[in-house]
Length: 97
Image (cartoon, rainbow, N blue to C red; front, side, top):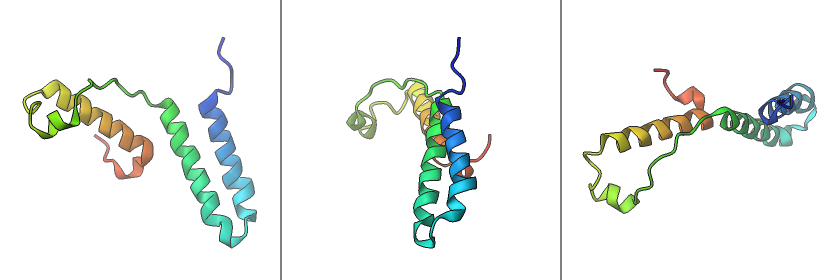
C-alpha cells in the first residue's frame, strides 16, 4: 500500500498553494523571499523524483592527476550524475537530448 499523497506530491501541493494563494498577498519587500521558498520547494520535489545512479568512489586528486583519463565508464557515470543534478537544480538551463 502506498500513502497518497507522497512527499513529492505534498511539496508540489504546498508550492502551488504558496504561489497561488500566499505570494499575491506578500508585501513587496517579502516577494523575493516567497519566490525563493517556492523555487526551493520545486527543486526538492524534482530531487525526490530523480534517480541518481551511484558513482564509483574515486579521489578527486586522482581525477585531476589524470589517473582516470582513459576510464570511459567513470567519465560517463560522472557526466550522467552531473546532468541529473543540473536537471534537478535548474532544468531550464539544461538542453534536452
